[in-house]
Length: 109
Image 1 (cartoon, helix red, strand yellow):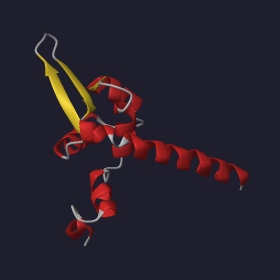
Image 2: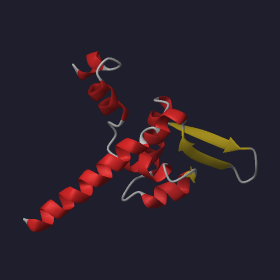
Image 3: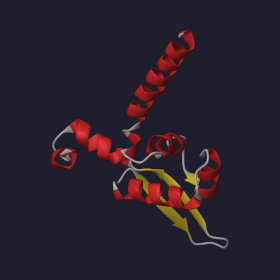
């Protein structure tokens, strides 16, 4: 049903874009500037090479990130946000704010 709303409903559309388990955390790390694959992998808790590769491909297919290959030896590849991906920074800020408030809530209970 949510797939029927993709491209029409802002909530269903955004949910599909960030549906991967690690999508938000990946977007957070890439929002700090271009990052290489292995550097990103080191920042991700308990993530396999294949999982990160698949998640990056999905975010690239959705147009949120771009992959830039440099013609050099050894090969160098960096990931960065696209113009539309940079607009996601506002969402990340909101998620961070909510997350911090929720952590405080958890610590009070």
